Amino acid sequence: MTELTIFYDGGCPLCVSEMRHLSRRDSAQKISLEDIHAEGFVQRFPYIDPVRADQILHGQLANGEMIYALDVTYEAWALVGKRHWVAILRWPLIKQVSHWVYLFFAKHRPRISKLLTGSERCEVCEIKRGEL
Image (cartoon, rainbow, N blue to C red; front, side):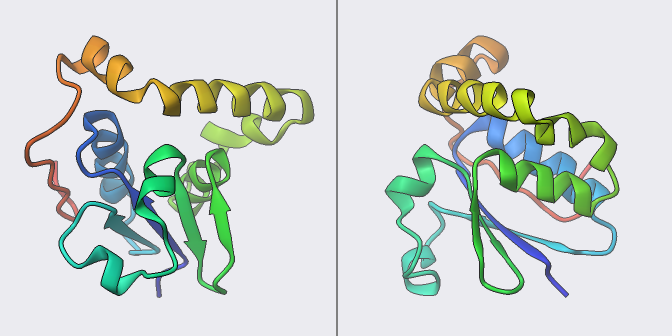
């Protein structure tokens, strides 16, 4: 059963890279990945604004609760057994600072992606479960 649905930017090389890493570690298939730019997305998820979801990472828990930004990242990595990797994101002072850093990253994602990967956008960034 899916415990978390992540609404991610499928044209962002960095976003897709993180989703690939999550997918590889999600052997129990607790996470569903939804590209906000995929055909039919708006019809399947009319309650998700793709423009807003492109600005800040959106996630939905199994109970329907929406979570955002680093809360999505924390929940996702915790679900795949890597809670210790992201536990620091919950520490009070670190949580606030990391949130500001995340907002900076989200705003400048294309430039950061270009710097790190050589590409601002992917033509076709696909994630296949278990892809290596």
